[in-house]
Length: 633
Image (cartoon, rainbow, N blue to C red; front, side, top):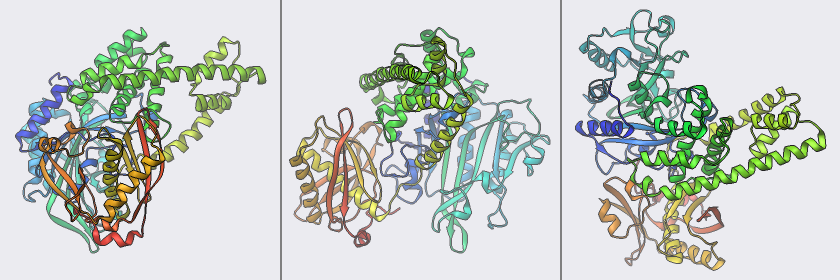
């Protein structure tokens, strides 16, 4: 197996997939637009949803990418050998594929890259496939089983198909394991029984790397042993749910996704993701700063390495530390990293030094390098602020001791929750003062209750999902285009969008501006939007080269993240006045006359140099259904 840097691994993947006929698109932002169901881009699939549902991709039917992703539901699990909050997901997509050979083409592309190009040992590769369901009248995925079997035979491996993996595992030489819809079916809602009528879904086929070739013979990919590391998943979206049941699609979709860091782990032959090239240089820097060895401080090192990386990328994509939404997650990640640093003996600012190494190594993301100074300034400011918070925590504990003479476990958790003061620091501080903690077990119970509440909230808030294309959200999304145009007209051409979150009830829009807007400015912006609505302007789109769009003055942000061909939406009235021209992916209304009255309800600071507007539309939304949408999903 080859030793490769992260950039070499990225270049290898993209280069190989281009040879198969796929066109590359850049990574979307970690902060998704037009998807109020999630704070973050949590999978490579998320930005592709419109095209999986039928929209035409501007650069073709075969796409490849490397997508930045954030998942924070299991943030407390970070510290083991495999969990990450930030990761890069490689993808290969084919929309409206030829039903006769789409599985063969996909499996060959992934097998040849992993086995022939990278040199992953096929003896350590295992496959799962869909065994079918009599209850749902969905047949076994025999074609996928046959194609994988041919690949194994070609390298001298007898591809034993194990139909009872939970009973026999690898004991009978199982290489291809068959599971039901719980393990090997993809749809938006997970279970085929719950799929809405009209939505696509289908069987998937996952690839696993054996971390322990001499492990227990009863292990199998779906067991809880930890022996098998999933390194890729092929989704064959070949069924559509109808009232009568599942119907085969004439032109199915393919969705391949694989964790780049996990593939690097397989390449290393080990099981520790933090031993891969993605972390080695930062890990060495952390050893220098702390004077401690990674092997003796695994959990603290892993928390720092992961959280600093995730926070650095989040800040670059616009999630600056704050007390709400995405910014809150950035703040939480940084503070967990700083606390872990204290645990290994680092008491001064250090996060900036680690973040700098990550940025310098992110040469695949050119805009990251350009934004380096700002990102590091934000990190340093946040770390300095939190160090003051820790000092405040010590002062509060000392005050508490003077008043009560002791600290219980429950009170220690209060200091953690309120001041970010961790248990181990509380214990150290008490020991220095000659005290010990009373009822220490109460801390664990308080932490358990807090974690349960946080997990429940996170499961809803960070779950991710399909972009919302409801009538209400579509109207407000169109209004957001007019809002940006109005802000640029009133405040100046420097204004660009820094983020948005649109639900069926309201529009939230972040933009760069250093000063609070005056009542007059807000009134002028509001009037601009309502004048555009009253003009009965038509919304249309066209596809054009990115360079042409940028040079012609089309509004857009992070131009380097757009593909070479972009979709430009124009809002223009009958007299020829253009109210807005902006790069976007939809959905939009066809005519502004259905929007009703636009009203700004709040303007406030979001973060340093960024303002936030919240707005609504006063309208009976049912009146607008006839005007939806320009893009048909």
